Amino acid sequence: MKNILGKKIGMTQIFDEEGIVIPVTVVEAGPLKVIQKKTVETDGYNAIQIGFEDKKEHRVNMPTKGHFDKAGVEYKKYVKEFLIDNVEDFEVGQEIKVDIFEEGDKIDIIGISKGKGTQGMIKRHNHSRGRVSH
Image (tube, rainbow, N blue to C red; front, side, top):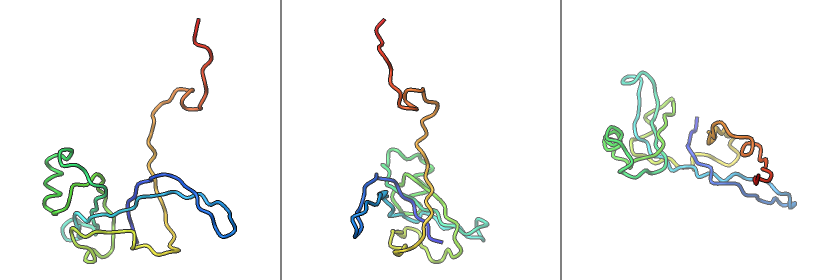
């Protein structure tokens, strides 16, 4: 199984040979850094812990800073674990890029919405207000 983290940059469009417009989502995917390898002997399961998108040093708390320093990698904003079968294929500090995918591969994308909480009717449904003078 191939896994990677990414961040949506925006939307655009491309044209095919017949001039038909195809909407396209632009995603910044990777590069990722391997922070930790987890094995059945030490943790009870096989996984790699990866980090995405650099983070400034003064925004990292001390326990997290120690975790990254032990691995010898830069501080990362997003840290995730991916369950894998063979941990020996990866090394701590290894960089994972988009080139693990080939053209024509099927992908499954999972997104997280911004979450705006409870909205009023005007903002939620794009209504407008009338005259406000009384």
